[in-house]
Image 1 (cartoon, rainbow, N blue to C red):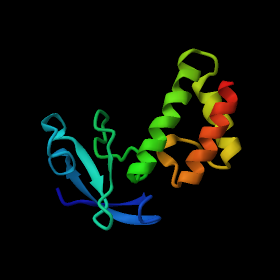
Image 2 (tube, one colour):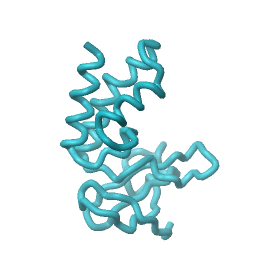
Image 3 (cartoon, rainbow, N blue to C red):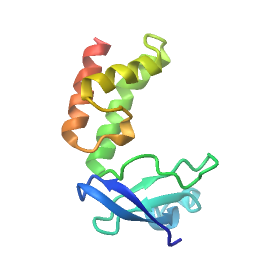
Image 4 (tube, rainbow, N blue to C red):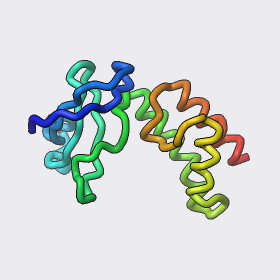
Length: 129
């Protein structure tokens, strides 16, 4: 796979021309992911998965995260998702509150820095209290 796409890379702190590849390269030990599409930054080696179950199966899930950002996003989802899944908040309203607090349209995969992730996490913890 050789296509290129401009995607923000958290490791390089800029938009990069990411290379479309597959799970055989990104997760060579996971045969079950071998045929899935991924965008990879060849500058730093970080990657992001794709919305592979949609019509545009190579549409990236968001920015290309560093391992630390990927971990931060997972922590955020662990406290964020139960808030809307329990129906305590409507998902749309919860994301709107986060967008207002952060000053940009919130989606976890669009967080670019650990500071943004920490700010989102702290706000969600306040909402969950």
